Length: 402
Picture 1 (cartoon, one colour):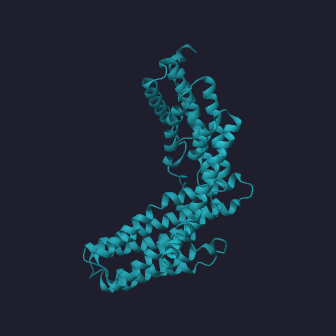
Picture 2 (cartoon, helix red, strand yellow):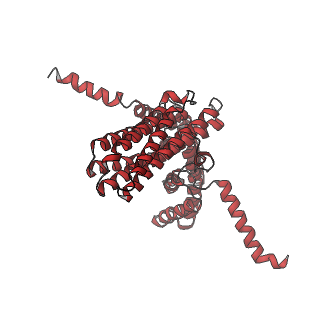
Picture 3 (tube, helix red, strand yellow):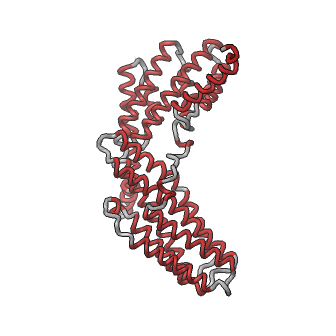
C-alpha cells in the first residue's frame, strides 16, 4: 500500500507535467474568465456573466487567433442583438421570436461569409441578448459586456503559449519533417528486406495521416508571417523564411505520400524487381537523410549553403533511373514507370528542400483554408463586390434615363 501511493502520485504528476502547454492554456483561460467576470461586473451592471462567456469563446492558443475570434464574436454580437431586438419588438418574447432570431442570424452570418465559429456565435449571442429582462438598456449592457470579454481574451491569449508564432511554426515543421523522414527511412528498410503488401499498406496509411498535418502547418506558418507584419519585436525575415520552409515541407510531404502509394501499387502488381531493390532503398534513404538534415531545428538559424544532402538524394535518384533504364528490356513496363515516378518524386523533394523550385515562390499559396477563417471573405472585398452589384443594378434600371 505504501509503495503504491508514490506510483499513483507520480502517475498523476506526469499526466500534467507531460502536458505543460495544455496546462498553461487552461490556466490562462481560467484566469481570463475570472478576470472577465470581475471586470464586467465592475464596469457594467450584471455584465460579468456575458463577459466571461464571450471570453471563454474567444480565447485561443495564440494572440493572432484570439484577435480573429474576438472580432468574429463582436460582429456576431452586433448582428445577434439587432436581429433579436427586431424579432422581440414585432412578436414579443416567445418561441416565435426565438425561432426567427436563430434562423435570421444564421442566414445573415452565411451571407456575410463568417467562419464556422463566428456563424455559431451569432445565434448564441442573440439568445443571450433576448434572455430574461430584455430592454434596450439591457441589450446595450450585454453588447458592452461582449466587448469587454473579447478584449480580455485578446490580452490574456498573449500568455497562452510560451513561444512566439515563429517558434511554434518551427516546432511544428520540425515535428512533421521528422515523421516524414522516419517514414521514408522505414520504407527504405522495407524495400531492401523485401516488403509485403501489408507493410506497404501501413506505409500508405501513415503517409495519409501525415497529409492531415498540412492544414495545421500552413495555418501556423501564416500566423507566424502575419504576426511579424504588425508585432514590433518580431523578425520579418525570419518569419518569411519559416513560411517558405512550411510551403517546402508541404510539397515534400505530398511527394512522400506519392512514393508510399507507388510502393503499394508495386506490391499489388507483384513486387519490385530484385535488380532495383537496392537502388530504390538507397534513394529513399538519401531522401530521408536530406529531409532530416534540412529541417532540424538547429538548421533554422544556420547557413544553408551546403547542399550536399540534397545532392546525394539527386545522385541516388539518378542511379536508380539508370538501373531502371538498363532493365527496361527484361522488366515489366509498369514497374519501370513506377520506378521512374519515384525518381521524379525524389527530385521534387530535393528541389523543395533547396527552395529553388519555381513552384514554391512563383505560385501564390492560399494563406489557409477558408473554413478556418473568421471571415471567409474580407469585409473590404465584400464591400467592393456589393458596390459593384449596386452600380450594375442602378445602370440596368436607370441607365436609359441618363
